[in-house]
Length: 203
Image 1: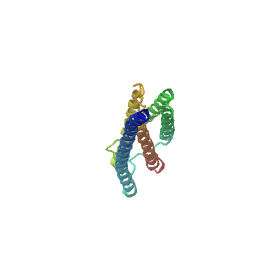
Image 2 (image 1 turned 30 degrees about the vertical axis):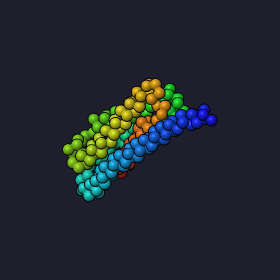
Image 3 (image 1 turned 90 degrees about the horizontal axis):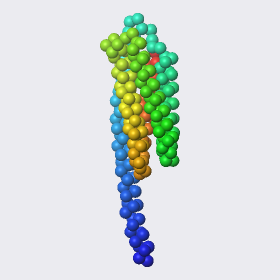
Image 4 (image 1 turned 90 degrees about the vertical axis):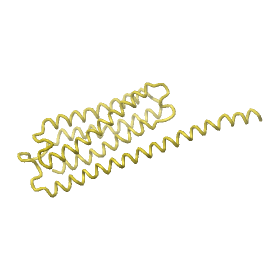
């Protein structure tokens, strides 16, 4: 009897600690989702402004510009959207405690995000209009630049998650960091799909 009671007494604090960890993780994820919702409001206001300006400005495109080149941005889009699947595989690898594949998939996601950022930089450098070239120039650079900042933030977060994987036992109790990072990356991808349709498809 004494040993049974002792065993229960030992396990009760363990269960309490696990429940406390799950509660903290749930609260943290809720807070992060609220943050993403607030970011969504910002992007939605930019989208609305872009649509209003495009539909009401007589000379929407800068003089001498007939439209934007679509092929390279489309390739960048495929790479960025595909990276959402890759980071998902990284999450699944971590759930199975397979750190090797977790690191490989996370590095691949970072590489794909970096490819997108470099591709966008090359596009900017080749454009014949700037930020101050009319309403179109201002909105184009604002939207793509603000999104690009989010992509770079996502790459930085992934780098931090990758570094944490080399700390022994770091992911034993919680995967909140990588789950939040993955959710942020999916958010960034969805925002870009909308941007691509607005800016490049709807010309």
